[in-house]
Image 1: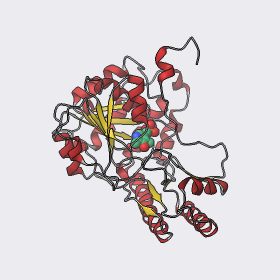
Image 2 (image 1 turned 90 degrees about the vertical axis):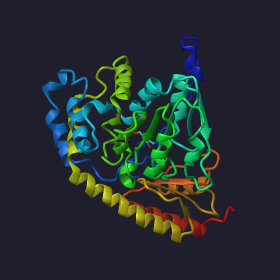
Image 3 (image 1 turned 90 degrees about the horizontal axis):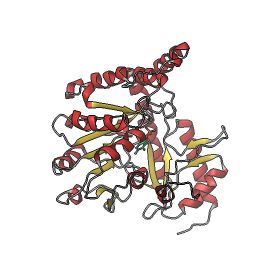
Length: 362
Ligand SMILES: *Cc1c(COP(=O)(O)O)cnc(C)c1O
């Protein structure tokens, strides 16, 4: 703390991202990165953009990217005016908190969810109320109906549980809250859910947020986008243009555009992750883990007999990093990113060894 700080700074609770270790020979299953590389067409487009052009500012509205996203969703009535792009979906979400969720009533989100949401509430001074997930960690839509609120936000599939809310239930939630904005953060939807983008043309209060960090394997490029009614998009643009006119650099615009257009690479890698997930879930179940039903590129698993923190520490000793959260209700879970089949096997072998060696904790 310092006397030079603005008062709000000492009251912030910054988000803690998963560890990005410096060692390179680790099996890194802790931050839900894609084990397969990005589209080769994206890499080629970025390489082609590297040159003297970098002295020039990029397109302030990232128009080629908005166009590619709109074209991909044209069947659902999406035009470039329905699309907002940002420097990672975290930035898109931050602008959405400021542009769409600062009202008198508190906003609602699940008690177990993406931990950046309370951080944005602190930064933008948005009051919030958390709604407990059901005992099976599902979102109960009825709990979000008939209660005055300044907006609703949740990831679908949820993080860090991986559980999916079926699209009909998403629609019931959106339709049941016509006077507030509902933000569906679909960071993981490509790994097993139906996107709510087709609902956008019917619900002016729905904003769907996507990232290229997970299913498009471009976490290092920092690109995310939102799809919603043009009035919502205009609010986001007003905030963005009061903050940073050029959030996407030239490399990000061309790389993201090429990635969105490469449906073949997307399908192939997405299916590979889904198939590895099936095998990992089966392997964990054989070892006695309870695994929540996952529609994401990670699984959330607990063992009835062994402490999660101890398991995570032992794996760490083997050079395998998984994510362990200490918050209430989930302290006995490990969140394990789906790696390559080799990485999943290394993890399962290590777990099996530890379960044999360790005295039971419970
Ligand atoms: C990974 C993730 C994001 C952020 O993605 P970036 O585009 O890399 O900023 C947003 N929401 C959830 C739920 C995520 O897991």
